[in-house]
Length: 144
Image (cartoon, helix red, strand yellow):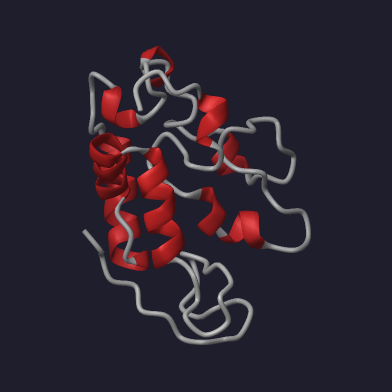
């Protein structure tokens, strides 16, 4: 995992968010291209100015992930993790720990297994309680 350039991390943000699960990325009109594309005009302003994406300390890390930062976990990451745990059943800190311990490839497979609709087989959105394609209600429990 160490030394993996940001361009190879695809849509896994430095904070551990899988951008493929975000409603902004999944929407049909004006979709966001993910956290790494800072110039995306379809990205909400609060995402373009994200403290984590624009963190000077993060730029100094070898992996490009927050877990390599000297201030890990910072207050902003803890706040984000708490909100996602409470509202969406997902933990940025647990995602980062998984990536650090098992690698990005295993994390991506785990995400695919967890965030695929069991009825229609398409990807789910972390920000919705049902499949955007078939409407099936989804269970969002922490998985680590």
